Amino acid sequence: MMYRVVFESQHPLDKRLIIERGPWLVDRASADHWKTYFSKLLPHQCIWIESGQQGAGLHQNS
Image (cartoon, rainbow, N blue to C red; front, top):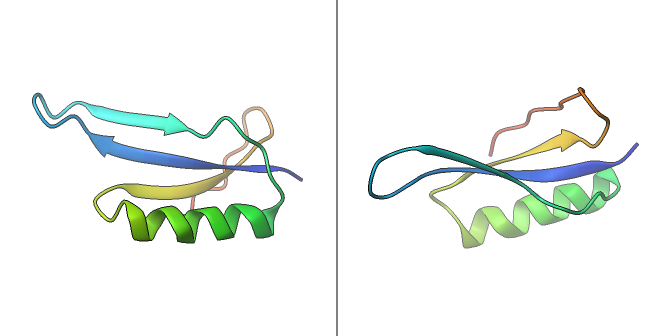
């Protein structure tokens, strides 16, 4: 199964919720690695992993 890393943040001016899904699909070990890596670089963003399958979502908050 393939996974992607998802980033959630708020727009600084009007506080809109912004959700960006990474364009890449990777295996679970790589998704865990990238989530850990980006969590350190972007501490104010909520970062999680979701399944790359259409309609399925594995939601793991950081």
